[in-house]
Length: 239
Ligand code: NDP
Image (cartoon, rainbow, N blue to C red; front, side):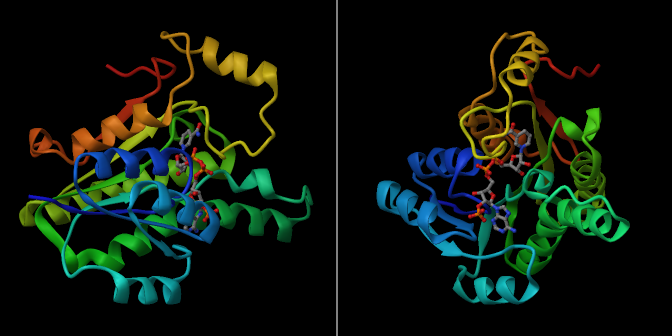
């Protein structure tokens, strides 16, 4: 039986690969994002349903809710990114506060608001998967802090959702190529350093992340909850 899957920020990069993966499995997929262009392109290519929404805005989420099915099986909180790439470089305290909050909004508040918004519609047997980051373990300023916060907030979510038969986990990518994450600001030396830090000797692909998300949302992963699944080619290892 087909499942209903909501993927936030699904118009590009990792979210797009996750959307393709679920669509190819025959699931009913809804993708969201702020820009209509990438969403329409993906919808035309794959038949997924695309809805414009800024997940940091409660009013936009309320409008989105009116368009969603009564029951959701899988929520993927993928929307986000390092908003420092868009910062104007101002260094006064007010600018620092604005830029710090932008990262919290983009990565932590989006996931919290979206999950809260669809909470009542998440079905038993369902799964919530957040896209975290290796930055949660390695730094990267407010961006890393926002992703670390996401993983910590997920612990409470997993405890709350467990009795309803819903899992909640984080997939934490290392460097993933072929997305809009770095804008055009990734220097060759940095790229080479990121690849050299892996044991696999290659960047991750959006499909690497899609596979991990699909596993956590699958029947095989029903006893896995409150976890962080690192997908980084060994760039950050755990015991
Ligand atoms: P992209 O920039 O390609 O994808 C991010 C997507 O999120 C875009 O489609 C963007 O669309 C959407 N988005 C951002 N903010 C919002 C918002 N407020 N509301 C709705 N949609 C939003 O980069 P990636 O695919 O790489 O990033 C996906 C996730 O993976 C992010 O959470 C990122 O932090 C994480 N990640 C990426 C890594 C990498 O190396 N690429 C490494 C570790 C983690 P739009 O602008 O149209 O809204």
